[in-house]
Length: 248
Image 1 (cartoon, helix red, strand yellow):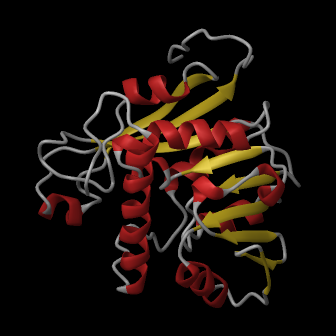
Image 2 (cartoon, rainbow, N blue to C red; image 1 turned 90 degrees about the vertical axis):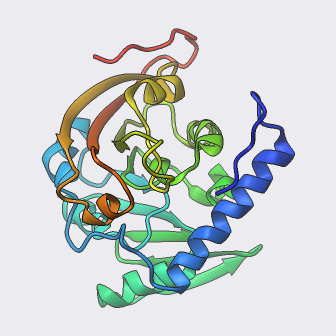
């Protein structure tokens, strides 16, 4: 995947990378090349969701949600789910797989699919605004940040902050490996990158880190010899402060 080479990416370069990123994922869904999809709830979600202190009835935003079963887990915790996904194929498969009756509406080129407790917005994450997304009380990001090339991760974090209410915590799951061994996606996102992206706005707590290589044979075949997976609790700080947060 092509990258911007300037120290500070220009808007034109960022748009080019985002367009290529979007085309890449649309193509993956069209070809059913979705090895990233899990056929069960993510174990780190089930172990750590309660850490966020999100109550029943809370609205949870899941960016780049695909057809993740994690949305069903959140629904069963009493949450309402607001997802965003670029591919209409992923959204349609999700509702079909779950045998949910769904309604859809299209306004200004944005299609919103709704079923009991779940609202999925089909379109580019970077085109979302607060009016379209609506309010929410928490964020679950298992496969969104790590799907972004390094050139887009900073812009992703900025846009997520622009969409999120001040008090919304985030459960973030990242992968880390030696980028010399493999080109993403998924993209290596080490602890210092998490701090750079979110430290000014969140207190960052590492909840768990595991050796994930054995659970990812496809990534081994792509050349990885080591792989770690980490769950993070991002707890909002006063956004008026420019202090760079440290990991708890």
